[in-house]
Image 1 (cartoon, helix red, strand yellow):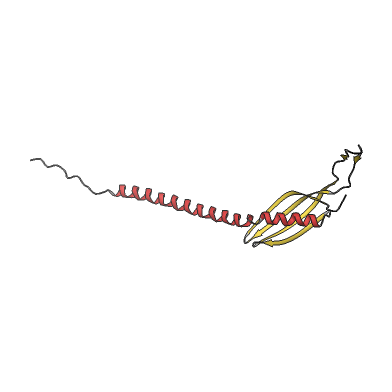
Image 2 (spheres, helix red, strand yellow; image 1 turned 120 degrees about the vertical axis):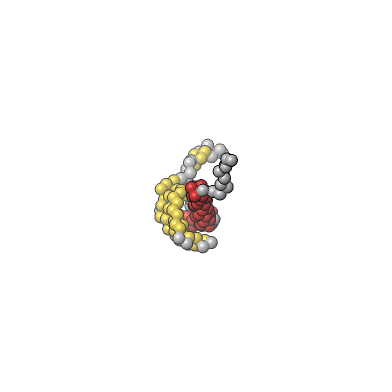
Length: 144
């Protein structure tokens, strides 16, 4: 009479170790991806919070340049919890182009009234700080 060996239906130790290694590696990759996405989301939220009042700040700076048309203009303030500082330096002070008067046929010239400023803007909110440099056009209001 011949006996057949019994086949084992249990996992071997090597199979369990390989499966657990794959499981832990997968869990590690998923948790790191989740952590990275949380950090990116937090950073994006802080940036959006800081940049939300930017149109209001730029409007304030534009008004300040219109009210104080000088060679250098500086200021600071706070809008929606975002503190800002700016420094504007006039790089061009020019007149509009001369214009031909249709009735008289004479060219009319104007005195300088337009200023182009280089503006350096610094925003601060919580633990973040951002700097911007842009140009702003301003003009003297009561010049003929």
